[in-house]
Image (cartoon, rainbow, N blue to C red; front, side, top):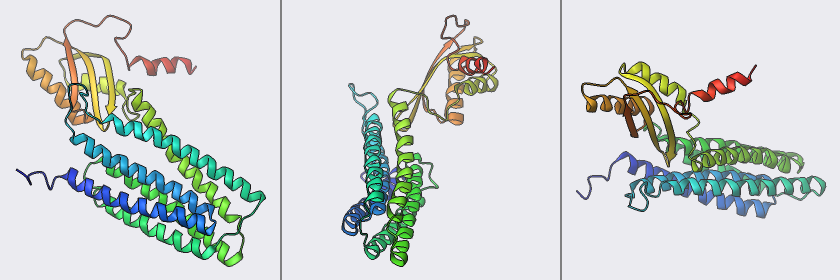
Length: 310
């Protein structure tokens, strides 16, 4: 029993995530030191981008860890939501870092600073190698259907652009001595960081506010369920939210009184799991039509927007 879970996909993903996190975090520190020593703002901006990668990898790693922790009477979902809170704090920190880099870049346009091109080049190439290594580690796990690993791999792929930008700036400084390229590229890299931070903030705030995932179309799910199972007359009081990576749902289903209640309930659960990857759903089956203002929650919203489009 001691080794029965030692080769699970979760363990393999965790190992890949840990290795990629260590590589990214170590080179992020090297880039910070290199940026300060060489005077390169582009390296510091790229280090900020690598911080987004390190954070994404850390949250993915924490999600794997917390998913293994059993829930308790006080925390019925365990600690899964902690990664979302950490993501929100990280997004705020990234916005502040980006503002500081842009402010520093503006200062450098008016008061140019010397930049050690060769040191900048060596550190930037090392950063690029680190990103390629981290991406290779994560991409090996992409055949497994793990959102954390795929999201982290996309973060690292985006950071490759930052490293290439820093190398380009170092080449320009080495061959022409034109140092304004450094703050210019630092602003461009900062825009990439801000884009990642904004997406992270939107997703984490939506999850903290118990919002439905952006990819989930509740109206389409209701129609799909009615078409797929003939006994289903109506679907209402639908609520969908995320806890960590776990999709949760509650819904009321008006049905034709079935001969086999448990069989129909099983069909609904199978439909949600198979088509929408919702493994945890609370289904309330009813035989009478719903009456009340919230009966068609999720279906009336698209019509409401449509009515204002004219």
